[in-house]
Amino acid sequence: MAGLNAHYDELETRAPEVRERELFARLPAQIAHAKAHAPYFTRLLAGIDPASVTNRPALARLPVTRKSALVELQKAEPPFGGLNATAVGGLARIFMSPGPIYDPEGRGADYWRTARTLFASGFRAGDLVIDCFSYHLSPAASMFETGLHKLGCSVIPGGTGQSELQCRAITDLRPVGYVGTPSFLKILVEKADELKLDFSSIRRAIVSGEAFLPPVREFLRSRGIDAYQAYGTADLGMIAYETSARQGMTCDEELIVEIVRPGTGDPVAEGEVGEVVVTSFSPDYPLVRFATGDLSALLAGVSPCGRTNLRIKGWMGRADQTTKVRGLFVHPHQVAEVLKRHGLARARLTVENEGGEDRMTLSIEGVAGAADDIAASIKEVTKLRGDVKFVASGSLPNDGKVIEDLRKYD
Image (cartoon, rainbow, N blue to C red; front, side, top):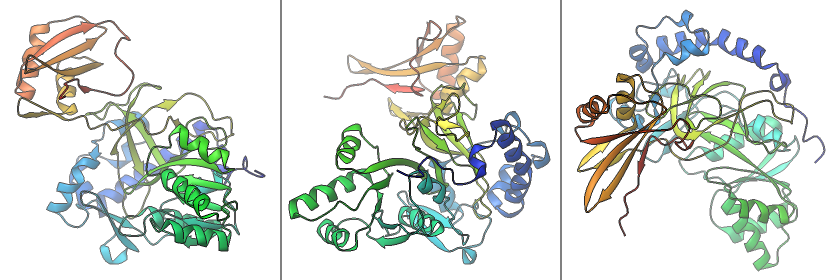
């Protein structure tokens, strides 16, 4: 597609060290803003001098806020748990995600920062696009509609369902692009075939909201649709997006992205799978070290498309591996606490059921030590007995799992 390798602006091709310097030059003011205007961060960062947070090691010392905590935080301090810096009356919209979790949208243009993602996928001013994300309570449709408007595109608000009506609208109006889930795009193509309607105007797509599986990607390609995957959340907006290079997903220019060991706030080595943690520069919802609950890993080097920002592998599963053992919940942060007590780095807690009895084993990589002391810490922290096993360095899978439930129930 002509112009697909062009860049949205000069920010995308900055030298990585320049980007890092410029983001961290802005960060102290953003942290000060969060402390001054968002009550939750006033409390959480009470002992932090914003002027001191000027690099990644300093940022990594700040506490994380986990998405999994939002339901309770919002119940205690409605509607946003005190994480918002803009009062309700100053917002454009309020959405609801499963939980429920309430998500604010500010009044700024392209609030969710999707225009950059859309541009990387070939969308341009003057395009007519059908938006098939849900328009009911959830923010995804608004995320992409506002980005399309920023680019100068026109939008058909398709929403979800009513596949026959949507196919007829596509046949009549001839949109060139689609945004929505990949599975619904496949449903629309198949419905158009069934009804003998012309779907050929759709040539490009942004898909999100679910895994973009290879069979679906290949099906769409066979129908002449160039589809790209985007990764975002209702809290942060766009986080990363696929480009013409088709090598991982490039991070957004307005975020600081970290990958940390699940259950902790500790950054992992490049290439190691961990939880995606994001700090945003939103004036309305100034999230500092927000743990998304999603797993990914950083890719080495610069994208062949010319964009120089960090790249992640994409969505690789969920970081919250909490499981119940003998009636008690065991959490990743408890495993992290055991490791911290003994100066350990990598380990995995496996849960098995032998002879009808649950059994926990903590496999520790690359060291040998006082197994009895570590087992005592497991019992103290989790209130459950666990065995300790030492394994060779590099032998644990690089999949981000801290707790692995191997029990079978069938």
